[in-house]
Length: 146
Image (tube, rainbow, N blue to C red; front, side):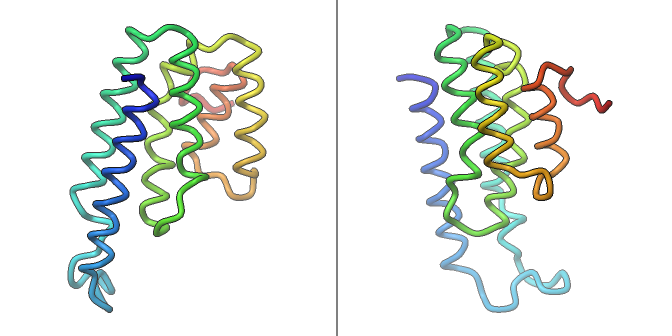
């Protein structure tokens, strides 16, 4: 099974978990800190851990083509998300795990991915992790600001 297929399975499991949270959610859950806000559920940590492990494994073992496909899939998952906003933000957060994969991309693929990423996430809507990802795609060290 390819790394991208494994990511799709992870995202499908996450989507099911989020749908389950939405179905169990009560009207005022999480308001003023009371109840169980779905954004605090364990499935978010599980997603983060699984994506971390997958990206680390791919960075060490995958060929350049598979690494590029996985990086593209990780970076594009939040833009394709149709579920609740709190879950989309988690998909944005896991983009930081593509760091090692970005480093393995050839310059042409990195530039093409940077252009599509900048188009997908306009400057006025980017979060700090997205600024770091875009900087890494542009060849700057990951996590370092100018």
